[in-house]
Amino acid sequence: MAKKAVVKKAVAKAKATEKKVLKKAKAVGKKVVKKVVAKAKAVEKKVVAKTKAAEKKVVKKVKAAKKTVAKKVKRAPNPAFMRPMQISDALAKVVGSKPIPRTEVTKKVWDYIKKNKLQDAVNKREINADENLKAVFGGKSKVSMFEMTKLVNKHLS
Image (cartoon, rainbow, N blue to C red; front, top):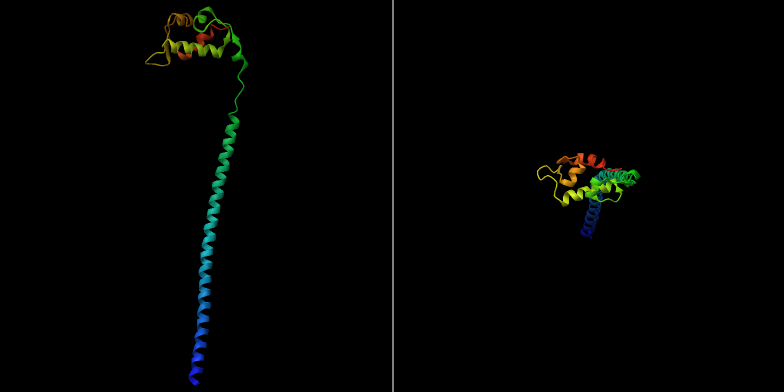
């Protein structure tokens, strides 16, 4: 019987020791878990901060885009440009004799220039006038595209 009592005591002692070890292991495990949780929270805070910063940037870009969209609203054309103009006889040979707006006159002059290949091959800003355009350009055989508009406007009333 004595052996059984000793064995029981030893088993009881072993179980108690096991419980203590498990408690310690749990405590250590809890510390590790707490550290891991703390690191996870820190990482989460960083991610949240970065997300908020990125969100702010996106909001700024959207606001800027809305402003540019608001600025790009199509304007109404100036009625003075759209008013049909009387065309001189010299210019009528190039664009036709019907009264048309100033903008259409410029388009038709450019169409005439391109159709007859009157744009200078080397310097594309120069226009080589044929007989019809010489009358419009005041006798000049070469005119720059910027000067051309000024000379054409003299033939509109």
